[in-house]
Image (cartoon, rainbow, N blue to C red; front, side):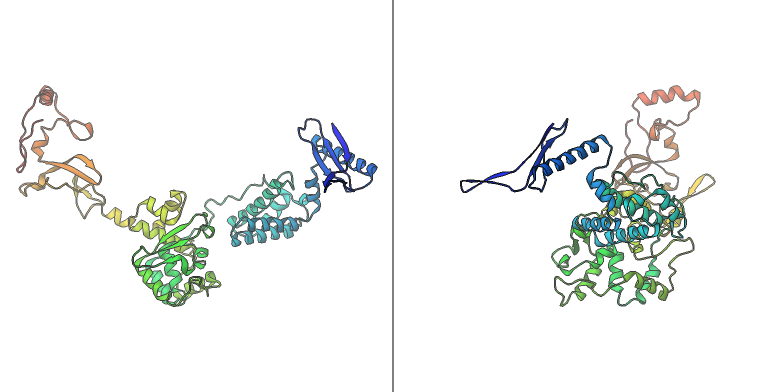
Length: 456
């Protein structure tokens, strides 16, 4: 073990200068590097005593007899001080202000309600007792627990506490208990616009872009591109998006016209919506004035974020592909777009079922156009109108969205030995040999009018 005190020497202008205060050097058993510490005393005996205590403390920490010094000092400090340092660290890292404000609010409420003053006061039992007395929704209770996990996890990483005391606390099961959102219908949106003249542009922007409220309120005119020689769009920088990626949002032509009228006289640094202080409260008031229930008969709520659900639902109703809808919604998981943000109650499910063929006496009776490309026939395969009501269509190949079919009359299908998808038509035992011979012997078949004989 290396253990000694010394005074540091420096050479200045050819002269050797010795420091007034002592420093110490030590290396514990198993260490490769030598550690140096300031002892802040000019007395050698005092310096040796201080270094001896430092080495003894390090050896006890290594043996697990005491906690590290930072952890011991942190245990004496109030949790409120740790919380403020944690919030300051989040702000430096670039986290959204709305996010760390919620963290501070929820953690502060827990510290005060549970009586937690220092880190050693935090206990799972204290949190569970506080949670059992609350009337909040299950999701809200889980968010309080998540806020404490975030705060305590930061303290663990900073070596201020050894472990998260709440890590074994289970979350409340919210399956089937979480309130769901719904998309606003076209008729409801018309009624909403009729009573919200000052918020009209904000609501239209939300329903035609799918942008979140925070993203909408932060848009400045320099981020809006409305030129006639380019595609109209809004470019939101990465620091203001949820996924921290730059967002390029296409604009509907009609929405561009609305923005061009509003942009007259505005500076590039001006916000598009500078006067909206509490849009959530105003939205609820507009719903009431328009006679639109905030919660429908199935318990689903309608809030400002529902405009984002409406945007995804309208894309689905227009047949936009799932991958494209995911890109427009800026989701990392396509299941989030399809399962959560698409309101199936506004999809044409009844129309899809009603468009199916109805079977009467074993034969399909067409009631309307079918959905999908399965009825399309390529050009050049049309038959004459003679006897077409009894023709049978057999698909031969599929290329992209086009299905090429061969139309045969019922009498012709009896001579087709190889059916669709590898199945053969049923034949009696007396005709089995003849069917086998037909498969191996080229023979010309009779075809309906309009086709040349072909060799099989």
